[in-house]
Length: 367
Image (tube, rainbow, N blue to C red; front, side, top):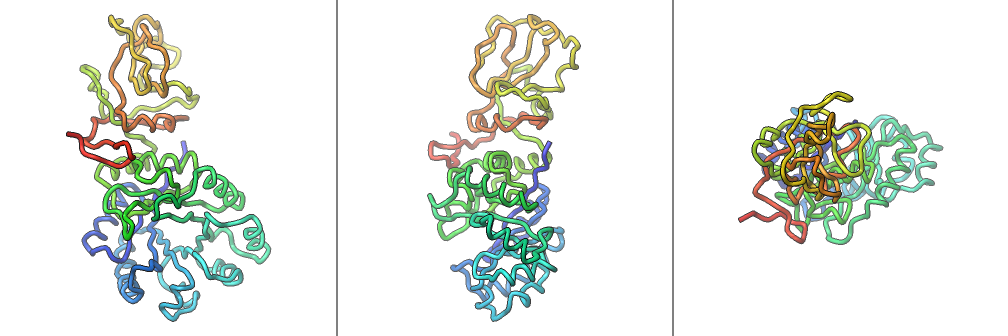
């Protein structure tokens, strides 16, 4: 099972109380990286510089690896050279634009560098290699896109990541938060456009699995409590699924279940409910056949012989089955998570939250 690495983002306009809360919550999801930007046009450069020291001091208490996004404009605003700026206690400098190849190669000898994964080319990486850049000190991070409909598609992200990873560069991409979105547009800060407004857990899984990112950063400064919990579980390799279980199946809530390594495209099979090649508990057959609708939670009954007690979740619509008893359903907002629980990943069924996605992909309250 792969390692799910996360980072959070903080910005200099945040109040100290909000900043402290974000840093503490980030550690709940085992976030290793902290992203910030030193060249947001709407922010006063001198105020950013004044706040940076306080940010670095607070972040140091939590042992984050800090990534600071800069451009040549940052250096001009602060009347510093790149190498003077690099003396600050920042682990990685993300060089957005305006830097010469020779500067980047030289800085990579002693400092961590993050290149722009969204615009990088094979010829550029080859030139860095020829000039002697230390690739062990370099990562590649995609842009985020505040303006709606300006983001990338997932296939492009995947291809760019494969290019970077062919040079042994770790890759990073952004997902939107779902609370306290950053201005001035307040429409989320995703890398991939069609993830804008999406449930953060789904966006993260898509970036890890479909986009092949090594590290996912939450671009906005805020997440709902539910999303902090979702990502904290995912950092441990566990996907939380909101589900409605019928008595007596409610005992399954909050139990961690493991998907088989040899995953089926049709169902998620739990390893915990029976021993391999041995008869499971004999469960009486119910009158009605279990539904095969996507999201159905079913358990094999006595008609299945040694497969009695085999717990499964339907990833897609399949036929109803008299040899299965119905236990419940995965809630509608979480059906899109089902394809990503495979090859040994774990899941846990939880009671539905009081929030769902509306038809525009944004969150709304249940009545």
